[in-house]
Length: 304
Image (cartoon, rainbow, N blue to C red):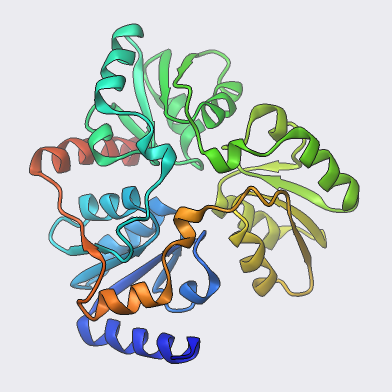
């Protein structure tokens, strides 16, 4: 089958079965073209919860599919490729978090949305990269334990110097792999380009950026900017998507290292087979985990 033929079958099957397809922005463009909604993980989950679909197919990674299930408990949710995980979400266990909480008594535990649903049950509130500063600022607590990404945590802490932060030594291995030397080379190669960067990158690298924000924030910045050239400091799929959306502008990847293979593992055929009932994995969570994680997520909505 050709790509266009597979896409046509996917569009037919999702309509026939009343299934909503979500595609995270780090998916390939051929997957975005068959999706009902595209964007960041939490926003996708919210969109799906408002849909009258019977089922949800999350083209992303496991923690994203879990969030969909938590916000849409009465709908069936599938992950098209069961191997699609997130190293950052999975690097901290519940037992390790409990030990951290003992080390930092009296600290509010703030979990980046990029965490497992089980881990969220031990936290006070979730944040996205776009909402982290606002929510941490609004928290009653003056002391915050930010997990699992210290890079995003440091970015937030710089905006709220009146509060005390503690961090877990984790993070996104892809964003954290970008070096200052690479960044200097990219800026030298494209001196007229603005550098747009995700706060999951290390602080010393983020310091080079003209704009720092979430994936959606980066794409929105490009839309509003009159600049013609941009270096993109987040997952390299965003370079491709922006090239399609703004062909009159030029986009350059900051680093080859900014390629998430967990996101790339999902294919059109995975989606097709899942819709056919011949692949994928239905996401099932215990009621205790559903209730605990939902409380953490709902607190984010209240504050954000």
